[in-house]
Every structure is written in C-alpha cells, then in structure tokens.
Length: 84
Figure (tube, rainbow, N blue to C red):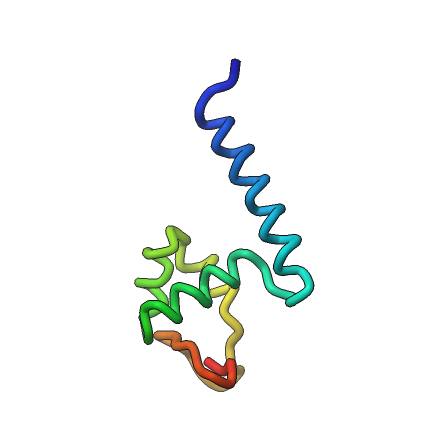
C-alpha cells in the first residue's frame, strides 16, 4: 500500500511527462507554458506576485524568465510579438 503523497508525486511526474511530450515540438516546457497562461490571463503582473501565484520561489521564476542584458524587469506582460 502506498501513501497519498507518493501517489500524488507519481501522478505529478506522469502529468509532467505528458505535457513535456506535447510541448516538445514547440520547444516549450510545461513551466514556460504555465507562465504564459498566467501572464495572459492576469495581464501585467509583478514577478514576485507571479511566483506566489504559481507557487514557485522567486529565484526559480527569475531563472526561467529571459532577460534583456541591459534591463531589469519588475513585471512581465504577454505581447503579440512575444517580447517581454
């Protein structure tokens, strides 16, 4: 018999693999897709609030956001051209 936590972790990994395979042709990860959806639904949002919403620590989120070398972003917004 397995504990509920073990079952949840196994299910989470299976879902991650499923989405990873679905997004692979787009060169997109499941985490990146979640970020895009959250920003698209919420509009401009401070990165700290986005991290809180996605239950990510800020450092992990900041590492996943591409940055322009000359600017520091405090918030993120989805644009038609794909820029940030």
